[in-house]
Image 1 (cartoon, rainbow, N blue to C red):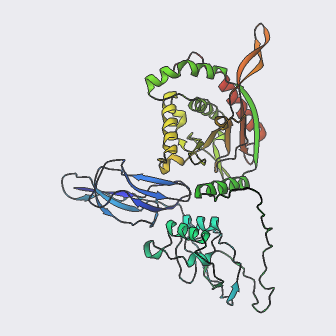
Image 2: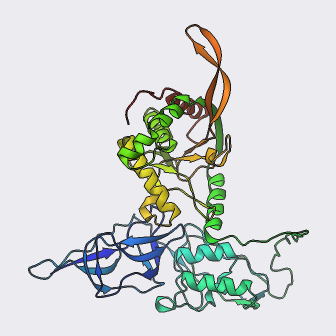
Image 3: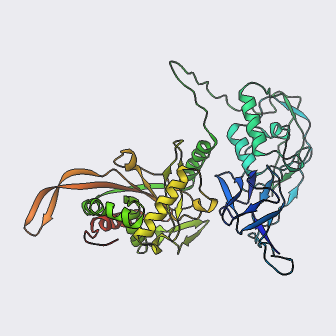
Length: 463
């Protein structure tokens, strides 16, 4: 027989671990290739992990709620091959070089009682090993939820964990949040103990416990008075993450938005003419989205700075054209699945990929890789009736294009016989871009070129 290893898949550049939510299979179960074996969660999305081989599960190495680093072997599968027993080498996980973390122990402070403790705000460079009396480990997912819900570090340390070695899992902290909102948990006055902080340099001011003014109080936030007939709805986890990502994007990139309009009459008439035959022969519907993406990728090759990202003082120009498309979920939230290698696909391939990703998004069947690696994003605000919008950049990209609703309007049409007034299908385009590397001239030139590409759609083309 041959034993192969199933490893925790790569979930994106910024994700280093995931939490196991549930196992769909157990030891001894047969599994097909690409069949779901387990569900996992990160701080961005919950996803299913498929089997890489067909065979029988012989070993499961982690339990539900365990936090597992990317590249770690999580299960083993007997593929049923003949011959001697062999085990494939686990997939090698090469982590990016990381500077050694200097452990600097801060001198113990006098024990002090603080009634209004601030929420714990983990920094991007913070180590995952959070100090404290019990030296517990907290995953980025748990820390993210704690930050969003205003859970202090002291509160976090007092939450009983059901994960491996008593770790606090996603389920534990969500249950604690629910109990706290229901009034089942009363936050006690906590005593802050000295902790070991992993950092480069920390200067801690001396605190005098005898003086009442030793601890500087935060300015009181004005109380929000809610009057009238209202309904209060708590944000779900995805909505909180979206809100955070949007605010972070605004803080990261100086946004500039340019606008133009395009006469898309040729696109509209061509689609109306071929859509029934297209669906009959290809087996999928033809929408405007793949038509837009085909034109956009063609123009992007002439403007490589649009297909880039920033790393400090370096500009990284991407050679792959991976187009994200903002997709509405039934919950009202948005997710951005990515069409990989969009410039290499013809209109049939783009249509099948777009429709498949949209269906997976609506049915919560997207895989982790489906939302990673985007280099440029297209959002169709016209789907909801908007004429135009000012989209927010999807980091770490440098531009996002919004297309508005297509409306018939009377416009001036230039002909060899002179100008005339005609009824045309018009659409506004708006693009937000990162002014750190995309200047107004480049952004406006690219947007204008996209509009012209839309306008010159070949009415007589085959798909």
